[in-house]
Image (cartoon, rainbow, N blue to C red):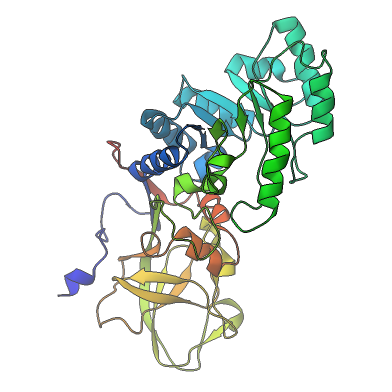
Length: 387
């Protein structure tokens, strides 16, 4: 009977080898999430945001599987990411969100990358390059509320009215970014939509893009010609709490149990003696910690509960502080012998979503995904791609 409580991956499974934890990335789920978002935004092209190493799942893997699923436009943050994406998806259109690095226009063109021009200086530099090299595609980013990158609407109007501003190149895309789309009731969404409508009118005939993952769910008015999902592709909830997330989970993190031992009532657990045992307890110590991106902020203490794990199919709370390499878990309520040295316990997966882990750590799913550590044994599965 105890075998029914075991991890789905045997302790000596060759796919984990001698690593402390196993990170399984379901590329089939990633492709399915893109298809769902593309269908939701039917009528607009659905791109894929693969910056930050594909939100932690592997940029090349993400680019290849999304391209195979039908995605033809990608967004990265930096030129280096764009060059990697170009190798993985040779026929794709690739935009660099951080814009044009000074003096690098020829490098962008040579790598087949399109800068997202977000300042007057960038637009001027790209235009000067195009006067010598010929018209080269780029996007123009207009700020409608974020106050990060992007030219102001009045500057966009000035440039659009000035016949010389875009004489050397024609923008391939005009775009902006929603600040509060994860909260559908926030009035800023409607204000940004109205402002972006003004922007689009300044650039007739140029494809327009406003919606991120959450923006897609705000409805067709936000879709325009191209949508740019990011977090939802990787299984994260595109809206704030209380939303029934339709996306399939893409990552599963399982950590190896290094030891199971007894603790006595009133003893403490971990650094700082942060948590005191309120009963005689059984403690499982697993080989993952904040050096692996399992954030210290998800720790437990006498003052507040932390995160949890799934051990032998049952929820079990984290005990004390998460340290650099180790995390303690309370397995007192599990059946005797249900967890042993070498077992794997789930820290992220079907039951414990990346958003739950993020909430326990006081952060967002984006940070959890992009913090996934380098010490995991990684395997990519699904969509015909083996481990």
